[in-house]
Image 1 (spheres, rainbow, N blue to C red):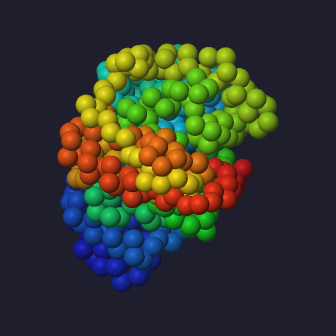
Image 2 (spheres, protein in one colour):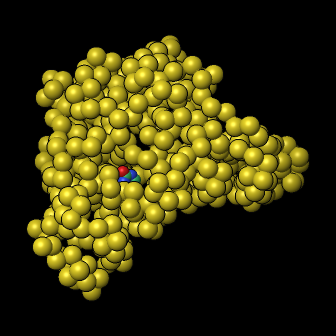
Image 3 (tube, rainbow, N blue to C red):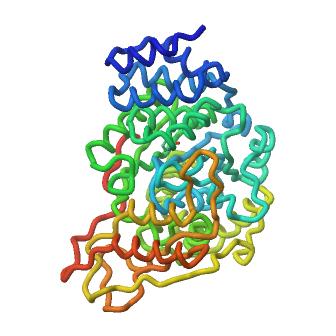
Length: 434
Ligand code: URA
C-alpha cells in the first residue's frame, strides 16, 4: 500500500521527501492507485512548501518512468530540437515556429498540452482546425516527422501519462504556478520525447505564471538544471514579455488564423519577432551547423518566400486537418470594443483578456469542459499604440449577445489609455543557458 496520507502530511509540514517516496506517489497516481484528491492535496502542499532540486528531479524522473519514451533522434538519425512555452495568453508561437523550422530543413516533432488556467493550449488551438488529429500513435508520430518534417501531437497515452493527468488536475486546483511543478511538467515531456536541444520560452508578467523577471529566471534555471542533470541535452531559455497578450488574437481558431498570417509575413511585429528569435535559436542548435544570425536569415526567408506557409499546409493535411482558412469555425457575434478617449495604450492586461476569452468559452473551467473553438478576442491596438476616441481597440468574438456584452466590458477594462506612450519594451527580455 502507498502511504499517500503520510507523504502528503510530511510535505505539508515542510519535510524533504526521498526520491523513491515521490516516485511511489506519482507512479501510484499514474496506475490509479492514488486518487485525484490525494494528488491534489499533495500539489497544494508542494505549492506552499516547494520542492528541493533533488525532489524536482525525482518528480521529473518518475513522470518520465510513468510511461514509454521515444528516442526521436535515433529513429530519424538526426539531432532533434524541440521547444516549449511555460504558458501565456495568445501564445500561438509553436504553430508558427514549427512550420518555419521544418521549412528550413530541420525535423520538428513536438508534444503540446491543453489550456491551463487562463492560458491557452496548443492542442486546443489545433483542434479548431476541422479534422485535425492531435492523437497520433507513437509510430504515426515518428513516421510523420520523418516524412513531413513536422508533427505536433498530444501526449500519447504511453508518453508521460502521469504529467498528462497531473496537468489537468493542477489546472482546476489552483496549483499551476509553482516553479518545481512547471519545470518537472515541461522537462519530463521534452526528455521523454528524446529532444537533444530545447528552446524554452519562459513567459514573464501579468499573463504568465511567473509574474516577475526573478521568478521567471528561477524557473529557467530550474529547467536548465533538470536538463544538465539528465545529461547530453542543451537547454536555452528565452525570457519573454507576457504583460500583454502575445500578438493580437486570444482564442483557438482566431490564433490559428494569426499564426498563418504571420507565416505569410503579415504578423503583428512583436509576435513575428518572437517567432524569428525562437526559430533562429532552434536552427542554431540543430545539425545544420549554422549560427544564430544565419538561422535568423533562413527563418526570415521562409516567411518571405512562402516555404513556411507550404510547410504549414503539408503538416495540417498530414494530421488530417483542412488548412483552408474558410474551414475554421467563426463566431456568430462579433463586437467592437471602442476607445473611450484619445491617447496611447499604456497597458493591456494579459490576464484580463485571457479571462475574458475563457469566459467566452475559449478555455475550460473544469477538467471535462468542452471548448468553443470559434470565440475569443482580437486586440487591434497594443501597448504603445496611439488611439482616437471611439476607435476600435479590440474585437470580441462571441457565441451570443450576453456573452459579447460581458466580454466587451472585460476587455475594455483591460485597456489603460494615457496621454503619453509607455516606454517601449522588447519581446525578448533575457536569454539564459546555451
Ligand atoms: N506547460 C506545461 O507543459 N506544464 C506546466 O506545468 C506549465 C506549462
